[in-house]
Amino acid sequence: MFKLTKGINEVGWVYPPVPASSLSQPGPASGIRGHARRLSGQASTKCLQRANTFTNRIVKKWNALPATVTDADSVNKFKNGYDAFRSSQLSLS
Image (tube, helix red, strand yellow):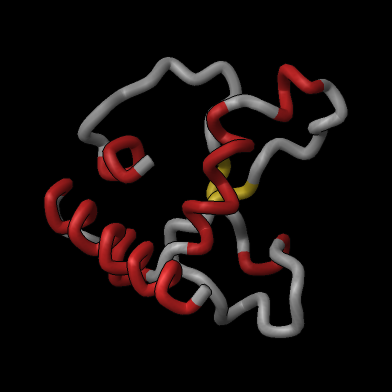
């Protein structure tokens, strides 16, 4: 997802990921949580084939990342930040 949002890779989307507005996000502090690159998934996930699309599988994980990870300058910085984030999440569990 990092490569797609930075324009490193291009995909001919049938249903492209949609940037999420702060108003469409649930929660009491919806306007201040997350990073600027938040995405919203497809609304209809009743069909198993649609529920398992790339955008629906990755949106929750992508939106859970801190801004320091998603705003990385390069793929290697993103990978290092993601690994650090994952290891900190695993140590909390």
